[in-house]
Image 1 (cartoon, rainbow over the protein chains, first blue to last red):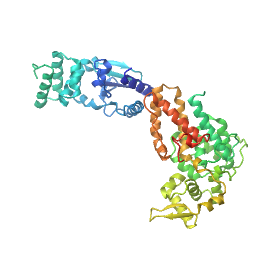
Image 2: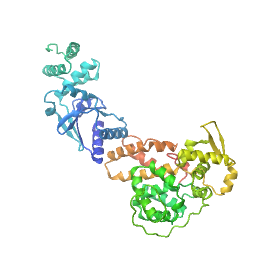
Image 3: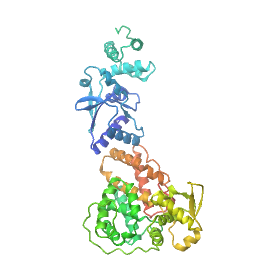
Image 4: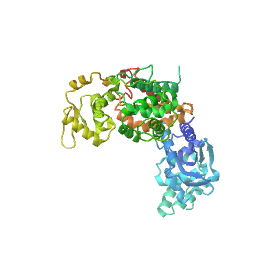
Amino acid sequence: MLPLDQALRALAQTLETRGLRYELVAVGGSGLLLLGLLSRATRDLDIVAVVDGGKYVKADPLPPALLDAVRDVGEVLGVGAEWLNAAPTALLDFGLPDGFAQRTEVRDFGALVLHLASRRDQICLKLYAAVDQGPTSKHVDDLRALAPTADELRAAATWARTHDPSPPFRDELRSALRLFGADDVEL
Amino acid sequence: MSSYREQVSQLVLGSLWSMWAEFGVSGWDRYHQDSALDLEALILTTARLGHRDARLRSEALDWCVAHGRIASVVRIKRLLASADQPTRDSFGWFAATVNAHTHLRWPGATSPQAFTRTGRSSAPVMTRPALLQLRLRALWGVSARAEVLRVMLTEGERFMGVSEVAAAAAYGKDAVADALDSLHRGGLLEGTGMRNQHVFRLHRREQFTDLLETLPDPEHSQPWQDILPLMAGFMEAADLAGTPSMARAAEIQRRWREWQPTLARLGAATPHPGTGGDFLRGYERITLGALERWSGRMSSRANPSLAGNS
């Protein structure tokens, strides 16, 4: 069992023992790991939203009872108190790609249900992160591992522009796309 | 071999029986003859864990009804104020039951429970080393002065300030400052320091201990007001044995964090139980070792972890 799987099962057991239940939307490297699309070691599970009444709501701050359980499990497993965090939840401010929720893959651990972003949506998020954090970031490597097609990169670039329509971002985006051989994307 | 939960239960309840036996409750096992016991801390912990041993609860209540006047209401109040909610809830009916059968007015009382005198307890033998606290109360009254002297006797020869003595005595700082001043002016304490930073220790310690004749062994004189709540916590955490192992580990980790201030006050090594699969094994090893030591059945040298002020 993957260490991340072990941690999630432990978290689910802990939540169940405490009479709690959460549905979370995960993105990032750990999400890809759980989908089997990535094999690099990654420890943090990035949560972009909490599912509340079927709707996505911002995950920052995460519910205190969930944070307590995450901390307890993290300290027992020696992976720290913030192995599950809401770092990317600001993405909700400008919206996730259309149809994101319908494309997620649901993993049911019991008292913890994870909605994992699909490969297509992860390409969008990874391209945006790669532009944001530069060509040497882990996001570029992750995007390479996903082997996106030209069409997928085009769709991802279109979505990324909705988050930042500024000319400097457009230039950075163009540079990032060049890293993947996509020179002909209309931005 | 008995389970961890059974071992914890035997050690904790056995310790409570052993301590009450020193106070005069009818019991066979006495492992705490040399340890300076703490009556009010014992009453609170017995109230909290009484539902696990009906006979212990009944005999402790019987003793308190007969001899509760020598308990300190001030200390009960202070220990209760720093206790967790389960302890406060449990003490509510315990105090109410004692109040209902005596003229005492213990704080925190709620509704009394059915109670019938067993009459098996005997009056405390004040000359027992373990009952230093009661002997000092017999001499100086149920007062801050008696508690200050108990702390001074069990803490050795070092100088101590007002705050430290007040914390160890579970008494208010103003009352302890007055008591220290009185005992200093009366010649029982020597003091040094300036203005508000006075520190004190026993003056002519040997003559004073000769007067009291039998004293507990300082090595076995633990800060029971800290240790007894921990013992109750370990016992309640042992109830988690039936939950899935990682959920149990996470819950214990949460409690371990809550216990840290107490463990720190004990001033002893507080190793982290470990990580992953080692966590529960480490936790059980640490807690069983500590409970065995506190039970009086093994020496502190055999298990220094969580040892307290040895």
